[in-house]
Image (cartoon, rainbow, N blue to C red; front, side, top):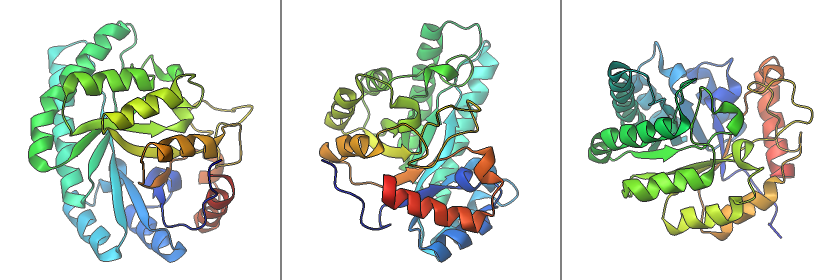
Length: 276
């Protein structure tokens, strides 16, 4: 049985979880709340810049867990694929500037493009970015997304597919971000987590909950305990395979974004300790 979480020492919150707040406001609010770590989404770097953001983050004492997001490699034209590769190289540079050890890749898909072709383009795109990432000392974390997003967000929809790509790319700088919102349904999940760990590729662990009923397929994630995912069991699987990183709370929620964000952060902390 998975041991309950006793404190906040492994809690990380994504800036997208508190979307109404700017990066500066996220930093200040997380520090005030005693949250030790942050994952930065690229939208909060706009108008600030990665260098200034990095300075703020270093001054704050927050641990930067990752940068979200790169990816979106598939395209119907060579120019589109080249632009995606260039943008991912910029994401690597931004990660290095803010002190993030890896970039999370939402790998992309194009409506009408066969999934096998999208997956080939994703693998090729990661391979093209990889030398730049290795030189910068930044890793690339493939995040499988739920199959409901296979049309236009990601053709990588299972841990098996992500692990296959890791094996094919054969670099210690490529791994997987496990997001339970996207993967909790997969009957192979426990075995594929073990496989990922054996590849030394288990880079990140994202948590939230699946509401029943789900009112919106993008912006109605729940906090831990709001839904039907057995979060402690899945956390137990990653920990049994040696994962000792942060538990990253990543919630897209119109309902929670509408709350007072300081009160919401306290709600996150309570849900984390009680239901993760």
